[in-house]
Image (cartoon, rainbow, N blue to C red; front, side, top):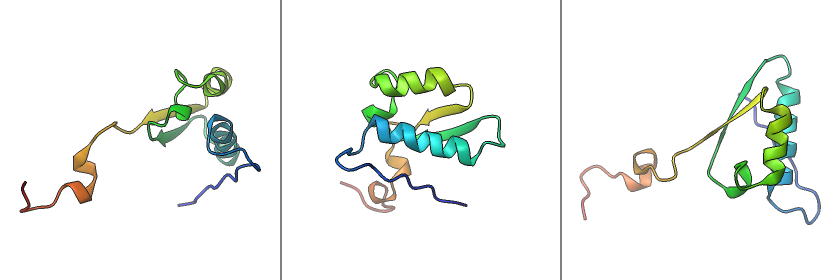
Length: 88
C-alpha cells in the first residue's frame, strides 16, 4: 500500500481545509479510478453536515470521492477494550 500525507500550512491546524486538500491529493493520485472511497473517523471537520467546506467540496466532487465513517463507539474493534478472560 501507499501512505498519503498532506502537510498543513503554517497556523492552519487540523480542520476542514486541510482535510479537503488531502481529499484533492487522493483524488489526483487515484485519477485512473472512477470513484475513490475514503474511510474517516467522526471528527466534525470530516462531515458535510458540520462543515460548510466539506459540504461544498462534496457537492463538486461527490461523484468521485465517497466518504465512509467508522462507528462512533465499537469496543470490538479496539483490542485494548477486549481482553479475553478479563472481566470487571
